Length: 409
Image 1 (spheres, helix red, strand yellow):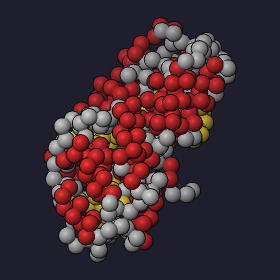
Image 2: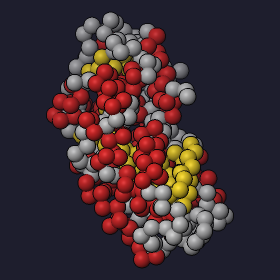
Image 3: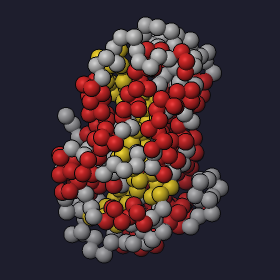
Protein backbone atom coordinates (compact mmCIF):
# COMPACT_ATOMS: atom_id res chain seq x y z
CA UNK A 1 0.00 0.00 0.00
CA UNK A 2 1.03 3.61 -0.57
CA UNK A 3 0.89 6.39 1.92
CA UNK A 4 -2.66 6.19 3.36
CA UNK A 5 -2.63 9.94 3.80
CA UNK A 6 -2.88 10.33 0.04
CA UNK A 7 -6.49 9.18 0.23
CA UNK A 8 -7.70 11.08 3.27
CA UNK A 9 -9.03 14.57 3.78
CA UNK A 10 -10.87 14.71 0.55
CA UNK A 11 -13.60 16.49 2.49
CA UNK A 12 -13.00 19.65 0.56
CA UNK A 13 -11.34 18.43 -2.63
CA UNK A 14 -13.21 19.62 -5.68
CA UNK A 15 -16.18 20.69 -3.58
CA UNK A 16 -17.11 23.63 -5.78
CA UNK A 17 -17.15 21.48 -8.88
CA UNK A 18 -19.01 18.72 -7.05
CA UNK A 19 -21.81 20.95 -5.82
CA UNK A 20 -22.09 22.57 -9.24
CA UNK A 21 -22.52 19.13 -10.75
CA UNK A 22 -25.07 18.34 -8.08
CA UNK A 23 -27.19 21.25 -9.25
CA UNK A 24 -27.45 19.53 -12.63
CA UNK A 25 -28.25 16.23 -10.95
CA UNK A 26 -31.02 17.87 -8.95
CA UNK A 27 -32.69 18.97 -12.16
CA UNK A 28 -32.96 15.40 -13.40
CA UNK A 29 -35.84 13.03 -12.83
CA UNK A 30 -35.53 10.94 -9.65
CA UNK A 31 -35.31 7.15 -10.11
CA UNK A 32 -37.85 4.70 -8.79
CA UNK A 33 -36.06 1.37 -8.82
CA UNK A 34 -32.72 -0.40 -8.68
CA UNK A 35 -30.37 -1.80 -6.07
CA UNK A 36 -30.78 -5.47 -6.73
CA UNK A 37 -33.69 -7.83 -6.12
CA UNK A 38 -36.84 -6.47 -4.55
CA UNK A 39 -38.62 -3.14 -4.80
CA UNK A 40 -37.19 -0.01 -3.23
CA UNK A 41 -38.49 1.03 0.16
CA UNK A 42 -40.87 3.95 0.65
CA UNK A 43 -41.67 3.74 4.37
CA UNK A 44 -40.46 2.12 7.57
CA UNK A 45 -43.19 -0.52 7.44
CA UNK A 46 -42.00 -1.58 3.98
CA UNK A 47 -38.59 -2.62 5.32
CA UNK A 48 -38.28 -5.96 7.15
CA UNK A 49 -36.33 -6.30 10.39
CA UNK A 50 -33.79 -8.37 8.47
CA UNK A 51 -33.47 -9.41 4.83
CA UNK A 52 -35.20 -12.55 3.60
CA UNK A 53 -31.76 -13.94 2.75
CA UNK A 54 -28.21 -12.70 3.35
CA UNK A 55 -27.30 -9.86 1.00
CA UNK A 56 -24.10 -8.60 -0.56
CA UNK A 57 -23.45 -4.89 0.04
CA UNK A 58 -21.51 -2.75 -2.39
CA UNK A 59 -19.79 0.11 -0.55
CA UNK A 60 -17.99 3.05 -2.17
CA UNK A 61 -15.57 5.15 -0.12
CA UNK A 62 -14.85 8.72 -1.25
CA UNK A 63 -13.25 9.88 2.02
CA UNK A 64 -10.61 7.30 2.99
CA UNK A 65 -13.09 6.17 5.63
CA UNK A 66 -12.49 2.44 5.21
CA UNK A 67 -9.16 2.83 6.94
CA UNK A 68 -11.21 3.59 10.05
CA UNK A 69 -14.26 1.40 9.50
CA UNK A 70 -13.12 -1.71 7.59
CA UNK A 71 -12.83 -3.72 10.85
CA UNK A 72 -16.43 -2.76 11.66
CA UNK A 73 -17.66 -4.17 8.33
CA UNK A 74 -15.59 -7.31 8.86
CA UNK A 75 -17.01 -7.81 12.36
CA UNK A 76 -20.57 -7.41 11.15
CA UNK A 77 -20.21 -10.02 8.41
CA UNK A 78 -18.58 -12.37 10.90
CA UNK A 79 -21.22 -11.89 13.59
CA UNK A 80 -24.29 -11.56 11.34
CA UNK A 81 -23.83 -13.86 8.32
CA UNK A 82 -27.61 -14.22 8.21
CA UNK A 83 -27.89 -10.52 7.29
CA UNK A 84 -24.82 -9.73 5.18
CA UNK A 85 -22.86 -12.44 3.39
CA UNK A 86 -20.23 -10.15 1.87
CA UNK A 87 -19.18 -6.51 1.61
CA UNK A 88 -17.57 -5.39 -1.64
CA UNK A 89 -15.65 -2.13 -1.33
CA UNK A 90 -14.34 0.37 -3.86
CA UNK A 91 -12.91 3.87 -3.74
CA UNK A 92 -13.45 7.01 -5.81
CA UNK A 93 -12.93 10.75 -5.64
CA UNK A 94 -15.72 12.77 -4.08
CA UNK A 95 -16.24 15.01 -7.15
CA UNK A 96 -16.88 11.94 -9.31
CA UNK A 97 -19.63 10.49 -7.12
CA UNK A 98 -22.70 12.58 -8.09
CA UNK A 99 -22.47 11.73 -11.79
CA UNK A 100 -21.85 8.08 -11.03
CA UNK A 101 -24.85 7.83 -8.71
CA UNK A 102 -27.09 9.86 -11.01
CA UNK A 103 -26.37 7.56 -13.95
CA UNK A 104 -26.99 4.42 -11.92
CA UNK A 105 -30.14 5.69 -10.23
CA UNK A 106 -31.74 6.98 -13.41
CA UNK A 107 -30.75 3.87 -15.34
CA UNK A 108 -32.39 1.61 -12.76
CA UNK A 109 -29.09 -0.25 -12.36
CA UNK A 110 -27.89 0.84 -8.93
CA UNK A 111 -24.53 -0.79 -8.18
CA UNK A 112 -23.77 1.21 -5.01
CA UNK A 113 -25.60 0.39 -1.79
CA UNK A 114 -23.73 2.59 0.68
CA UNK A 115 -21.56 5.70 0.36
CA UNK A 116 -18.80 6.55 2.86
CA UNK A 117 -18.20 10.26 2.61
CA UNK A 118 -17.05 13.47 4.19
CA UNK A 119 -19.01 16.69 4.09
CA UNK A 120 -18.21 17.22 0.40
CA UNK A 121 -20.04 14.30 -1.24
CA UNK A 122 -22.56 14.39 1.59
CA UNK A 123 -23.48 17.95 0.64
CA UNK A 124 -23.45 17.34 -3.12
CA UNK A 125 -25.57 14.22 -2.74
CA UNK A 126 -28.12 16.06 -0.63
CA UNK A 127 -28.19 18.95 -3.11
CA UNK A 128 -28.69 16.51 -5.97
CA UNK A 129 -31.44 14.50 -4.26
CA UNK A 130 -29.33 11.35 -4.49
CA UNK A 131 -29.64 9.96 -0.98
CA UNK A 132 -32.40 8.14 0.85
CA UNK A 133 -34.11 10.16 3.59
CA UNK A 134 -33.59 7.96 6.66
CA UNK A 135 -36.03 9.81 8.88
CA UNK A 136 -38.61 6.97 8.88
CA UNK A 137 -35.94 4.51 10.00
CA UNK A 138 -34.09 6.41 12.73
CA UNK A 139 -35.70 4.32 15.47
CA UNK A 140 -33.73 1.39 14.05
CA UNK A 141 -30.48 3.34 14.47
CA UNK A 142 -31.14 4.20 18.10
CA UNK A 143 -27.41 4.33 18.88
CA UNK A 144 -27.38 7.73 17.18
CA UNK A 145 -28.87 8.95 20.46
CA UNK A 146 -25.46 8.25 22.01
CA UNK A 147 -23.59 10.81 19.89
CA UNK A 148 -21.32 13.04 21.91
CA UNK A 149 -22.14 16.77 21.96
CA UNK A 150 -20.21 18.02 18.94
CA UNK A 151 -20.81 14.91 16.80
CA UNK A 152 -24.52 15.43 17.41
CA UNK A 153 -24.17 18.93 15.96
CA UNK A 154 -22.16 17.64 13.00
CA UNK A 155 -24.90 15.05 12.37
CA UNK A 156 -27.33 17.88 11.74
CA UNK A 157 -25.44 18.68 8.53
CA UNK A 158 -26.56 15.30 7.19
CA UNK A 159 -30.27 16.30 7.32
CA UNK A 160 -31.08 12.63 8.05
CA UNK A 161 -29.67 11.69 4.63
CA UNK A 162 -26.53 10.30 6.19
CA UNK A 163 -25.36 8.80 9.48
CA UNK A 164 -22.20 10.10 11.10
CA UNK A 165 -19.68 7.33 11.74
CA UNK A 166 -16.59 9.16 13.01
CA UNK A 167 -15.54 12.69 13.98
CA UNK A 168 -12.56 14.59 15.30
CA UNK A 169 -11.84 18.13 16.51
CA UNK A 170 -9.28 18.57 13.71
CA UNK A 171 -7.44 21.90 14.12
CA UNK A 172 -6.06 24.41 13.34
CA UNK A 173 -2.65 23.46 14.72
CA UNK A 174 0.82 24.62 13.78
CA UNK A 175 3.36 21.80 13.43
CA UNK A 176 7.04 22.71 13.39
CA UNK A 177 10.63 21.50 13.46
CA UNK A 178 11.97 22.46 16.91
CA UNK A 179 15.54 22.46 15.61
CA UNK A 180 14.61 25.34 13.30
CA UNK A 181 11.83 27.01 15.31
CA UNK A 182 13.20 27.58 18.78
CA UNK A 183 10.54 30.08 19.88
CA UNK A 184 7.26 28.95 18.28
CA UNK A 185 4.50 31.53 17.82
CA UNK A 186 1.60 31.49 20.26
CA UNK A 187 -0.50 34.29 18.72
CA UNK A 188 -1.56 35.22 15.19
CA UNK A 189 0.64 38.33 15.34
CA UNK A 190 3.63 36.23 16.38
CA UNK A 191 3.02 33.80 13.49
CA UNK A 192 2.94 36.67 11.00
CA UNK A 193 6.09 38.22 12.50
CA UNK A 194 7.86 34.83 12.42
CA UNK A 195 6.80 34.29 8.81
CA UNK A 196 8.17 37.70 7.78
CA UNK A 197 11.44 37.00 9.60
CA UNK A 198 11.69 33.57 7.92
CA UNK A 199 10.25 34.05 4.42
CA UNK A 200 9.22 30.89 2.62
CA UNK A 201 9.47 28.70 5.70
CA UNK A 202 5.76 28.65 6.63
CA UNK A 203 3.39 26.61 4.50
CA UNK A 204 -0.23 25.56 4.25
CA UNK A 205 -2.03 23.84 1.39
CA UNK A 206 -4.99 25.16 -0.59
CA UNK A 207 -8.03 24.97 1.71
CA UNK A 208 -10.30 23.29 -0.85
CA UNK A 209 -7.84 20.36 -1.05
CA UNK A 210 -6.51 20.18 2.50
CA UNK A 211 -7.97 19.45 5.91
CA UNK A 212 -5.28 21.48 7.72
CA UNK A 213 -5.62 24.31 5.19
CA UNK A 214 -9.38 24.27 5.63
CA UNK A 215 -9.31 24.27 9.42
CA UNK A 216 -6.77 27.11 9.40
CA UNK A 217 -9.12 29.06 7.15
CA UNK A 218 -12.19 28.38 9.31
CA UNK A 219 -10.31 28.74 12.61
CA UNK A 220 -8.72 32.14 12.01
CA UNK A 221 -12.00 34.10 12.35
CA UNK A 222 -12.20 32.92 15.98
CA UNK A 223 -8.52 33.57 16.68
CA UNK A 224 -8.65 37.05 15.13
CA UNK A 225 -12.02 38.01 16.63
CA UNK A 226 -13.82 38.53 13.34
CA UNK A 227 -17.38 39.83 13.40
CA UNK A 228 -19.08 36.63 12.20
CA UNK A 229 -17.04 33.39 11.94
CA UNK A 230 -20.01 31.70 10.27
CA UNK A 231 -20.11 34.14 7.34
CA UNK A 232 -16.99 34.28 5.15
CA UNK A 233 -18.66 36.72 2.75
CA UNK A 234 -19.30 39.58 5.18
CA UNK A 235 -17.89 38.52 8.54
CA UNK A 236 -14.22 37.72 7.83
CA UNK A 237 -12.62 41.12 7.18
CA UNK A 238 -9.75 40.48 9.62
CA UNK A 239 -9.20 36.95 8.33
CA UNK A 240 -8.89 37.95 4.68
CA UNK A 241 -6.52 40.80 5.51
CA UNK A 242 -4.40 38.50 7.71
CA UNK A 243 -4.19 35.74 5.08
CA UNK A 244 -3.17 38.28 2.45
CA UNK A 245 -0.39 39.51 4.73
CA UNK A 246 0.64 35.94 5.58
CA UNK A 247 0.71 35.09 1.89
CA UNK A 248 3.38 37.71 1.37
CA UNK A 249 5.91 35.64 3.28
CA UNK A 250 4.55 32.07 3.11
CA UNK A 251 5.53 29.48 0.52
CA UNK A 252 3.43 28.99 -2.59
CA UNK A 253 0.34 27.02 -1.64
CA UNK A 254 0.55 23.28 -2.25
CA UNK A 255 -2.37 21.42 -3.82
CA UNK A 256 -2.57 18.93 -0.94
CA UNK A 257 -1.44 18.34 2.62
CA UNK A 258 0.90 15.43 1.89
CA UNK A 259 3.29 17.74 0.06
CA UNK A 260 3.40 20.13 3.01
CA UNK A 261 4.33 17.28 5.33
CA UNK A 262 7.04 16.09 2.98
CA UNK A 263 8.48 19.61 2.88
CA UNK A 264 8.41 19.75 6.68
CA UNK A 265 10.31 16.46 6.70
CA UNK A 266 12.97 17.53 4.18
CA UNK A 267 13.53 20.94 5.75
CA UNK A 268 12.25 23.12 2.93
CA UNK A 269 9.46 24.20 5.29
CA UNK A 270 9.97 24.73 9.00
CA UNK A 271 6.36 25.15 10.05
CA UNK A 272 3.06 23.97 8.49
CA UNK A 273 -0.66 24.00 9.22
CA UNK A 274 -1.73 20.71 10.78
CA UNK A 275 -4.49 18.81 12.61
CA UNK A 276 -4.47 16.12 15.28
CA UNK A 277 -4.73 13.38 12.66
CA UNK A 278 -2.10 14.71 10.30
CA UNK A 279 0.24 15.26 13.22
CA UNK A 280 -0.15 11.81 14.78
CA UNK A 281 -0.52 9.66 11.69
CA UNK A 282 2.18 11.32 9.58
CA UNK A 283 4.68 10.63 12.35
CA UNK A 284 3.35 7.09 12.87
CA UNK A 285 3.86 6.20 9.21
CA UNK A 286 7.20 8.04 9.16
CA UNK A 287 6.26 10.72 6.63
CA UNK A 288 7.36 13.25 9.25
CA UNK A 289 10.04 12.75 11.93
CA UNK A 290 8.74 12.03 15.41
CA UNK A 291 10.70 15.05 16.64
CA UNK A 292 8.20 17.61 15.31
CA UNK A 293 6.09 19.56 17.79
CA UNK A 294 2.78 21.43 17.70
CA UNK A 295 1.51 24.74 19.00
CA UNK A 296 -1.74 26.71 18.95
CA UNK A 297 -2.52 30.41 18.80
CA UNK A 298 -4.24 32.53 21.45
CA UNK A 299 -8.01 32.54 20.94
CA UNK A 300 -7.83 29.04 19.44
CA UNK A 301 -11.10 27.21 18.70
CA UNK A 302 -11.19 23.69 17.31
CA UNK A 303 -12.99 23.35 13.96
CA UNK A 304 -14.42 19.85 13.82
CA UNK A 305 -14.72 17.40 10.95
CA UNK A 306 -16.72 14.20 10.41
CA UNK A 307 -17.40 11.36 8.00
CA UNK A 308 -20.77 9.80 7.19
CA UNK A 309 -22.58 6.84 5.63
CA UNK A 310 -25.31 7.64 3.11
CA UNK A 311 -27.73 5.35 1.29
CA UNK A 312 -28.42 6.02 -2.40
CA UNK A 313 -32.04 6.21 -3.51
CA UNK A 314 -33.34 2.99 -5.02
CA UNK A 315 -31.71 0.51 -2.63
CA UNK A 316 -33.92 -2.56 -2.25
CA UNK A 317 -35.92 -3.26 0.91
CA UNK A 318 -33.72 -6.19 1.88
CA UNK A 319 -30.51 -4.23 1.39
CA UNK A 320 -31.87 -1.23 3.30
CA UNK A 321 -32.83 -3.58 6.13
CA UNK A 322 -29.26 -4.92 6.20
CA UNK A 323 -27.78 -1.40 6.13
CA UNK A 324 -29.94 -0.24 9.05
CA UNK A 325 -28.72 -3.21 11.09
CA UNK A 326 -25.14 -2.49 10.02
CA UNK A 327 -25.26 1.20 10.99
CA UNK A 328 -26.73 0.40 14.39
CA UNK A 329 -23.88 -2.07 14.88
CA UNK A 330 -21.19 0.39 13.78
CA UNK A 331 -22.33 2.86 16.43
CA UNK A 332 -21.81 0.43 19.32
CA UNK A 333 -18.91 1.25 21.67
CA UNK A 334 -16.88 -1.84 20.84
CA UNK A 335 -17.01 -1.11 17.10
CA UNK A 336 -16.44 2.63 17.48
CA UNK A 337 -13.20 1.83 19.30
CA UNK A 338 -11.71 0.71 15.96
CA UNK A 339 -11.83 4.33 14.77
CA UNK A 340 -8.83 5.25 16.93
CA UNK A 341 -6.91 3.34 14.23
CA UNK A 342 -3.43 4.83 13.66
CA UNK A 343 -4.49 8.24 14.89
CA UNK A 344 -5.36 9.98 11.64
CA UNK A 345 -8.89 10.96 12.71
CA UNK A 346 -7.90 11.35 16.34
CA UNK A 347 -9.73 10.62 18.51
CA UNK A 348 -12.29 9.17 16.05
CA UNK A 349 -15.27 7.74 17.98
CA UNK A 350 -18.47 9.73 17.52
CA UNK A 351 -20.41 8.29 20.47
CA UNK A 352 -19.95 8.85 24.17
CA UNK A 353 -17.85 6.70 26.44
CA UNK A 354 -15.42 5.13 23.97
CA UNK A 355 -11.89 5.30 25.36
CA UNK A 356 -8.49 4.35 23.99
CA UNK A 357 -8.23 1.32 26.28
CA UNK A 358 -11.13 -0.19 24.31
CA UNK A 359 -9.19 0.06 21.03
CA UNK A 360 -7.09 -2.77 19.54
CA UNK A 361 -3.66 -3.06 21.11
CA UNK A 362 -1.98 -1.86 17.93
CA UNK A 363 -3.98 1.37 18.07
CA UNK A 364 -3.22 1.79 21.75
CA UNK A 365 0.49 1.35 21.07
CA UNK A 366 0.43 3.85 18.18
CA UNK A 367 -1.40 6.50 20.19
CA UNK A 368 0.85 5.92 23.17
CA UNK A 369 3.96 6.40 21.04
CA UNK A 370 2.82 9.18 18.70
CA UNK A 371 -0.04 10.88 20.50
CA UNK A 372 0.57 14.01 22.51
CA UNK A 373 -0.38 14.43 26.18
CA UNK A 374 -1.41 18.04 25.49
CA UNK A 375 -4.23 16.95 23.17
CA UNK A 376 -6.46 15.84 26.03
CA UNK A 377 -6.17 19.26 27.66
CA UNK A 378 -6.57 21.12 24.38
CA UNK A 379 -9.75 19.21 23.55
CA UNK A 380 -11.13 19.59 27.05
CA UNK A 381 -10.30 23.27 27.58
CA UNK A 382 -10.97 24.92 24.20
CA UNK A 383 -14.24 25.49 22.35
CA UNK A 384 -15.08 23.05 19.56
CA UNK A 385 -16.95 24.57 16.62
CA UNK A 386 -18.88 22.77 13.92
CA UNK A 387 -17.29 23.28 10.52
CA UNK A 388 -19.05 25.49 8.01
CA UNK A 389 -21.84 23.76 6.07
CA UNK A 390 -20.67 22.43 2.69
CA UNK A 391 -22.30 25.19 0.64
CA UNK A 392 -20.75 27.89 2.84
CA UNK A 393 -17.37 26.18 2.58
CA UNK A 394 -17.67 26.55 -1.18
CA UNK A 395 -18.10 30.29 -0.71
CA UNK A 396 -15.08 30.42 1.59
CA UNK A 397 -12.88 28.48 -0.85
CA UNK A 398 -13.82 30.76 -3.74
CA UNK A 399 -13.17 33.87 -1.65
CA UNK A 400 -9.80 32.45 -0.58
CA UNK A 401 -8.87 31.85 -4.22
CA UNK A 402 -9.95 35.34 -5.25
CA UNK A 403 -8.52 37.25 -2.29
CA UNK A 404 -5.52 35.17 -1.25
CA UNK A 405 -4.49 32.37 -3.60
CA UNK A 406 -4.55 34.52 -6.71
CA UNK A 407 -1.95 36.85 -5.20
CA UNK A 408 0.71 34.15 -5.48
CA UNK A 409 2.38 34.05 -8.89
